[in-house]
Amino acid sequence: MKRGIFAIALILGITLFIGFISAEECNDSDNGRNYFEKGTTLNSPPDYKGSWTDECVSDTGLQEGTCIEGLGVHGYQCANGCKDGACIKGEKKEQCIDSDEGKSYYTKGETLGSAQRIENGIKEYQIMSDICVKDNQVPQPGKEEGLFEYFCDKEGYVDVTSREAIYVCPFGCEDGRCLGTEKVVGVTNQPVEIPEIDQVNRIVYTCGHNCQDDNKCYPFGYRKNKEYCSQDGFSLQLSSSSQCKNNFECTSNLCIDNKCASNNIIAKFFRWLSGLFGR
Image 1 (cartoon, rainbow, N blue to C red):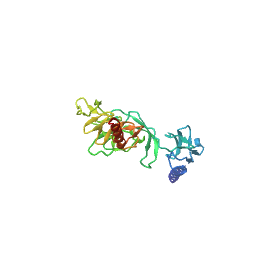
Image 2 (image 1 turned 180 degrees about the vertical axis):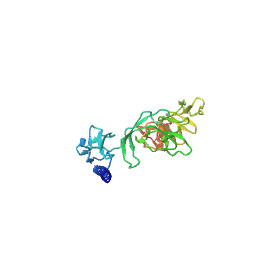
Image 3 (image 1 turned 120 degrees about the horizontal axis):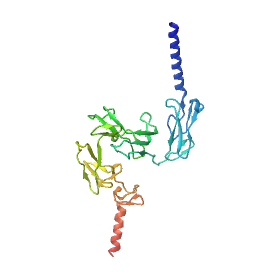
Image 4 (image 1 turned 90 degrees about the horizontal axis):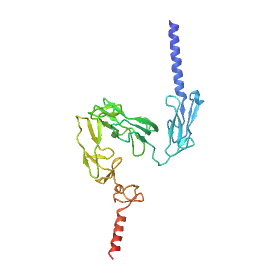
């Protein structure tokens, strides 16, 4: 009897010891999924001959080694290109793709792109599916059921922490989408009041890709209170010399060669015209 207990204890001890040693064996020189620094991951499974060094597999493709649950290798697309086993740093936005094109609460979507891990702050390539959050799994005082909608933020990353991502579904949530039917309010040049929810037919009226404020839908480019309706909602108008694409983005209401013109330049132009025709 004692021999049996000793044998079992010995086996368990050896198993725990091997597990401890295995966990300690993996070491990543660039401290995890660090795409902008070339690193080497040591003591991997036999398939990788004991180590893996980050390498570029194409102009933009990177194979990054990590020590998450043992050595692993995964692919990542570098926004600015890949060189010598690391992504090239630059100002170009990250590539982010959302299958339901943003905050579409009545269609389940997948968002592909770089997202910042909460535990270490490192951005890594992830595929995030819209999910239902029940029983207040995500803090939502007074709410019983909602949807966590992943979307691409202004910088081109997957938004995984924003409070804007949490949406309370009027008729409940199932399989990553709100139940019921979404009907987009038609908007032309002026804001339109949003109708009340149709409880009988379970229809919810939304603004689609237009802007919502004060229970109204505003058309793209609409300006009020020194803001304009953009694809990201209402944004502050831009000062002179700022990069622009449309006139309504600028405080001067004039975008020339992708830059906001200043009010002084406009005033000088009109004075020149006045002098020209006033002679």
